[in-house]
Amino acid sequence: MTSLSALFRSFFKIGLFTFGGGYAMIPLIEAEIINRRGWLARDEFMELLTLAQSSPGPIAINTSVFIGYKTRGVAGAAAVCGAVLPSFICILVIAIFFAQVRHNVVVDAAFKGMRPAVVALIVVPTISLARGMHPALIVVAIATALAVWWFGLSPIWLIAAGAAAGILWTVKLGKEVRR
Image (cartoon, rainbow, N blue to C red; front, side, top):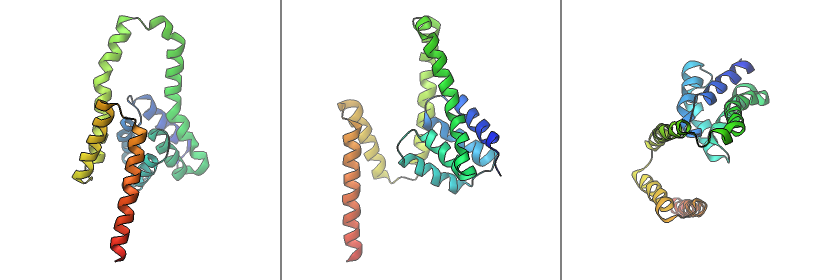
């Protein structure tokens, strides 16, 4: 049985060494949970990841919730605490000292230097997740991103339109299958 302290330590380490948000954490979570610890099989992890992506909230937190619950039940919330605590401490420290260093040239340069790494940490999982997609869906995803970026369209409207299109497509396919 997975110990609560091992769950906490694993997700604390992931939260501590990941910059760029939830999608940047996915490769680290996968390496820790599947390869290093063996707590889940790859197919179980992919199912939990799919569930985490479709649930509201940050994907890294959702993933830690589902993995914690899968391995230890309700007590598995230790995984969530481990994933959140490093960011919470970091933000708290920054908030305390930000006023003193916000115009510091070195701090500004450090943040500018991290930008390419953060972009890379987001692009790699995106490409990995897109590998199994139909080419038409990749075109739709790129067009949607460009619509948000170039035309300033609200992602909410695009998500709602995508959901409506998916429902209509499924209803249409359902009618064709019944014939």
